Picture 1: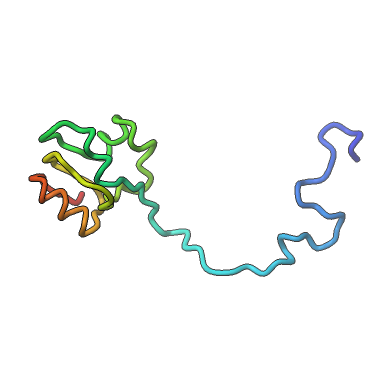
Picture 2: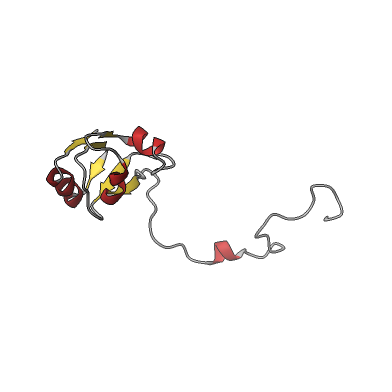
Length: 109
């Protein structure tokens, strides 16, 4: 079988014995319809200029995010020193308070 081109067995094949991945019990629940958000901490927004508009496209352009997935969620880790107009799909309460305390605006898109 292995002497032939393209021959061999698939990974995990155990010669017909019930494979390990089928013998072990499966646990939990995985929601395939759940939204997967890209997360950004408030302290990462300090690299933008004062009074700048920060949206998902600007975050990708600045190199903070590689891709946006199903949306962007801003988390409240760190401190913000600049007044920014932040537009994202979600904000934590602490992130919203820190952005507004720095003189910025929060907009859910």
